[in-house]
Image (cartoon, rainbow, N blue to C red; front, side, top):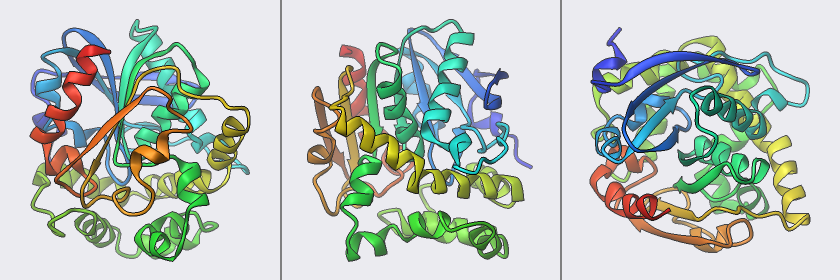
Length: 301
């Protein structure tokens, strides 16, 4: 298999033990700490195009989320709590404390952004700044779901079905499912934005039954316990205390439906953001535009 370290020259790699299991991460750069959290169906590898530039101003911590990449896959729970964003966020706090960072900035894409805003809500004071890439809150996704949105994000319902239905369906042709899904979420509707070495890593993970099961558990948590946590915070008027920057692709998932900025107002009173010309995978489709948008915000926070 292609060594993913080829995509992160000069970065260290190691494991940190947490209550969610052993977490793999890469670390490099200099300056204020910045935690980068990937999304589905990827791993820490998705940051390879933007990491060198970010590392000029920040000490980067780039882990695989629990159940993804090379991190441990927690044992499932009846309520899917081990794969909740609350559990993922708590594991990331453990990682950062182990590395000596009591507070830090965070940028997350897709599922990583959901763990990111949950970390900010559950652990006030930890985040100096939060950047969320191409998502709207889980509450908004489920409560604003209509025919158009359901067709657009069919995987939200499919992956959340009771086991082993999605595992069996995807497991029959996992690499095909990954390639088709990723291509369909780009602006170009192909895989041209992705480094072949990165695709090797993504295909290997989803082809592993325990990784595929973990991904499904992630979405089962999203349809149940994650939604309940969002609903409880909204009922209590609990909001993010740090500045929040929202960036989305003009052809990405949040670009259709509720305005991304409008969708975040209930959770983020200190809010800014913009779109870039890309699909869902902004870091790989439009790395330069993405960096131009987020780096000034991170520098000021």
